[in-house]
Length: 556
Image 1: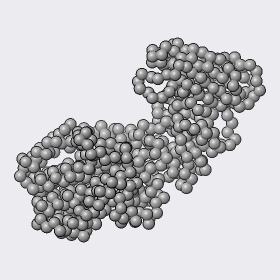
Image 2: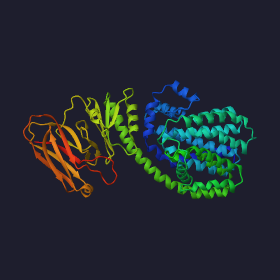
Image 3: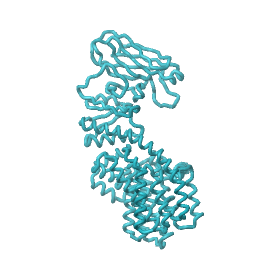
Image 4: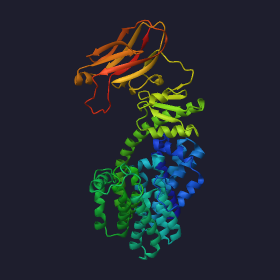
């Protein structure tokens, strides 16, 4: 095959890959991405440069190469998601090209190198790495690791060392690169070990610092050197190879079956890159296979043309079936996150100067740090405070003079934002929906759930009592589980410190009760709900529940 034909074949593969993954451009940012976009803007160029060259372990998980991607992209494109993804896709295809070059450098046949490149480029275990910019660290780490191996194979040791340094500063998994280079030197080089000394010195230094200075004492980022941790990781990652449980363990037999240096080297590289991941059972993600699967791709250099063709014919439909499932979920998540953040973006343009936000619900995969990141980005320099309506002390924040309420409606997938100003009056009747003025709710309330809101055994609220008030109304939703498990519940209501009425509920369903009130002057009053017995659902819900309220307030 001529070089021109090889380039044409690669461009055809790249075009097919882009067609298969065109749906990725309809996705949107994840919470980690929003967080990184927001805070990297405040890091100075000098800090990036220093952290890039320092030999010290960065305990704050700062990765200057990958994080600079967010800094640069946010400065150029803001929150234009497709442009972030276009860069990720370009880097992924570049990595596929480097896999091809490395496979050929190791003596792989054209069919074997093509099969390995195809597997690496399209593998669904790596789906998140090229659908979500949050895994740019893995993509860049693989880019510089492949460059390191290629430079080393051409005896460009200084360039190889620089690429190794950049790979480690992209992601710590590159700490295993010197061991992979040693395998290359043993099987393909002249077994001259002196040039590996600088690589191993850096690797050992960073590895020991990472173990001894890791600030993650007991969380998902903690390295756990136990057989149970290793087995849990092996179970997960062995499934990723062929997307079948434990299928990846069969790769350990390949070096014994095929007496070929390419198989030995590819298998060793994959195993070495996987090694640190085995002791990180709290962080199990398919995208973490990105760098190890460069080794898997090299194993195909030994494959005969017919075997490579037959495997691809069987593997491509199986792989594509997983693409459809993963794509549907990613687009669903992206649709919700886009609806949330773009509404927040429009609000920030029209309503500057908001000092605090309270959120009531959010898309399932947009966590608190993602919302905080979006707010930091949209309100630069202001650092607005964010609380959940379920946080202790949230009522104090919601009663401040400059606060916005972020109410997510999971059924319509819409974000409703209510802003409170100093002159915003209190209402006399509250319904539990996305328009609820949460600043009037005191302590003891949980998030909105389908038209009602659970209270704790004691909850308070503030209402504006009209002069014409004659009744107080309460609408509740009594679930069948509550009736079955505790038989019923009783609620007592106090208005302005005085008993207003009580009612015992012993049947399920929506129910409305009213109590007459004695005449009283108009004005703001506190309403208190006292519920007994306390409800602890049998489904394991850890909350202290009182009663599910749909609406309450004064009636004329």
